[in-house]
Length: 458
Image 1 (cartoon, rainbow, N blue to C red):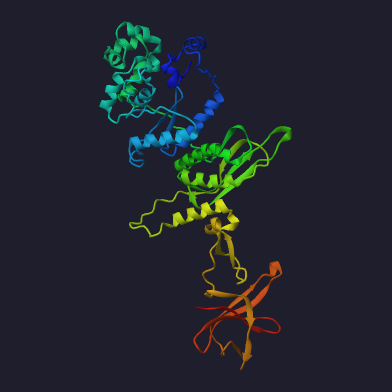
Image 2: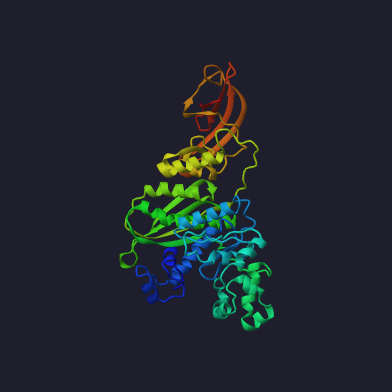
């Protein structure tokens, strides 16, 4: 027996027991065999998700993980708030954990591994402290068996009355080292802060692509949200550690493999503004999954980050704009696009074309920021462009529209469209009537040159 739940512990199950002993003490206990590959995958997933709180995460023995959050306490509102957020993230991942917090990594590890009180009426063990003096007091009361290096010598310790770590530290150090091991003293020094412990932080991958197997063949896309949440938490942790924000990411829904293989179904999410917060990304995923119709049962999910950008710093405005910020408006556009479809939430944008009929178009709102800017050197265009140019009369060799028109600016020569058989050859002018109204007109440069009205200025 390597680990026992709280209910099994209260029933008398202890670590180190054999399966027969567990069955004798608590016959209703469910025993699970170890799956090393799944354990390693779970630890990797948890480590990636917790990178959102600190980039310094280390995997330690006994299914444990160490986080150096000293620089993150103020950012997340203090140790209690940070512990709650860590627990909430673990619950979303589908795991439970016992947290310990202390000024030293080994001290936090020992506080987290102290067994619960068998008597439920007694106060729960305290597992968090911020000062070395408080940590020393709590460690002194822990049973020696909590420290892994003491296990070979437990009978001797109990025989001489050294049942807790405090009594163990009061023994002569030289004699204790001769009769036990150097590792035992080293772990005690690490725990009490008398020696710095060197930890190996996990390596943050340069790209993100995570995979998970579903618990069964899923035929309803909404049920995939559980696995998608696990993958999204890993991605947000990776983004925070790399100081990046994602603009596009893809959820691959994998189907049957082998002879009856079905190609994966991709679900690409495009954001109007790069983001890295899990709440917003999960909302978009949920809205899109509701609309997905699966062509075959899903047996696995893979999430991959696509287009990435540097994480934007928080706004430095002293007084926020009324009605919400531009980021809130862009998040609303993303949510509407996910719910109604990108083709139904459009915004006007300029395109890389000088022809007035082609330079403006309606595009999905989530793609607006990625469009090239219009040429700033071209003549100022009117705010109202006619859908179809109007031929103008000629009087006294001047174009006429209600009154003779005077050319006051121009020409702007446009020759384009030969690549799509819609070529134009025009000279555009700003013209003014006798009532000071300005018009946008052009001379069509053909064998029979003619003037056309194409726009009005306000």
